[in-house]
Length: 396
Image 1: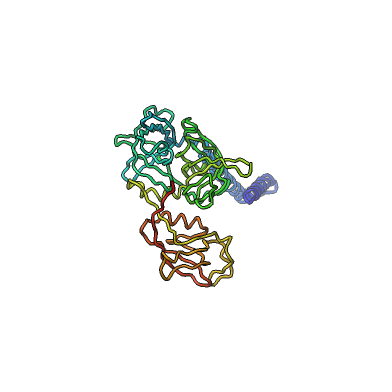
Image 2: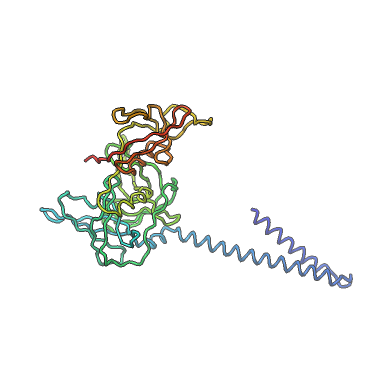
């Protein structure tokens, strides 16, 4: 609105100057000096309007380029790092073929890897011999052999290594910040839906912190503390493929599973994705190779702050609305001093804790055998305690 008013003002000035020029009559013996001033003012306004027009045209082109960049079709064509995986599971009974999806990434040594879901790779018996091959785009007819390099059972991640002579000069996936994604954010999922390579589906994020390990329906037991829920359809074969933000083209998660849940006769599908923030925290350990172990603690029993009594932070009148409320303590594991029932965990290893799942995530990313530092609110005091971290054991 301010720009419009400014332009109207400039246009009015232009009209006044032009009117002034024409209103001067030689018979009135107007001075050449006045005419010169009016012509000078006319030139200044004309130059200003021309510059503004050029700048607005440039702004329009920039905006158009940004809109084109966030077009799902353009993002799809700019994601040749998506891999179609052909999996052959060899057993005594023969070969069982299957498909999955993956994402091409690189480590600091410029070695190429495919990151995908562990469950998609080990879908056969544990005794099976696996052969996995990758194709990177529709025109890639050569299947590139892969070998298992690292795995993380808790987050269902497998890292597969390409051969040393693998050549690729295209773009590599960039993992964005999944914590900044909000419900309603547009996303696309790319993968081998029901075996159809490089299938693309469009949708929006519907829940940022869905179905964590402790609040998952019985039919969907998972160990990942929090997952993204979205409406970009994923099907068998999509596992391991990227969920991409159409805002900046970054990968905000690895597609995990499609869950059909029956709520008292109402059947619905959940499309779930492992957040990119968890992936980025795991990558340094995965690049070391082998099996990644995750931390755990059985010292505390927790619930979210919405269920806890209202307390106030020291020196503040606002009540504590976030945190993990302690409802149980294992005295046989923890010595003195130790947290107590009714304490509220506000921090873990320096990270703010807004919910029980935030605490679970920080503990899972802690090194087994290490000591986690937590800050708790007790009455009007903030206290610091240490928690021993054990190894997370995934139930069969």
